[in-house]
Length: 337
Image (cartoon, one colour):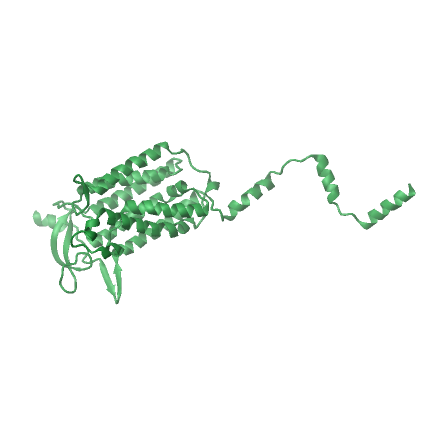
């Protein structure tokens, strides 16, 4: 019976890094990139469907992604500072983003700042933009969790459940233990809850729910984005309670647990008090969109302003060209008179 359970365990990848000459191909970075591409492509389609200008999401991403990566790393380092600045830590490794370690809250916050700057430049409302890209962002987060699988990180407590995840011993070329960059020896160190997988599945479920809600109800002004944040926080709160890897704690509770609870309350509050309904599609056009620029002229052309008939006749007469023959006939007539 024990052997049957062991056969059902989920194996971890043998490695998360492949070296091609001097180039290191990291699964973690690869899945982050895939997630960003998916979010931009799908997000742009959703934005256009709501009345926005095609290509806007990519333009905003140019600002939001770098800000988000910076914010994610800063949050991770701030909440896990002992790893880098505590005893035995190496401060320079705080810059090694490719080794994993991005806090979603910092990524969303600073990424939102970058998006706000870009939206201001494009002349579009940030809340409406958030509604369009909320589900794609959460899907990108789910895809990024696959990178955690290759890194053998973000796992939970030990378990004997058949879906438990095997964590392998990994060593480098010199035979030293290297869980992140090494290659598996095949030795199973422990079997744990695959909390990264729980979060992945939860995120996909919330994405599906958001899409259904968006289709059935007229939601705008940032309320769908608030639902995304609240839904993710609910799942993250539950996942954090299952993890036992090293983390900064307050009163014995992980910092991310507190953060999830606080942001959940704020997101629900925003959803309740925000403006109901959805924005006018015309307000979602970028300031360099030809349709937006020509709209006032088209409106004036379709609904001309009424004017006084006398003024129009006079204006029409004044605008008629004076022919030489008419002028000559007029002079002759005045002479005869």
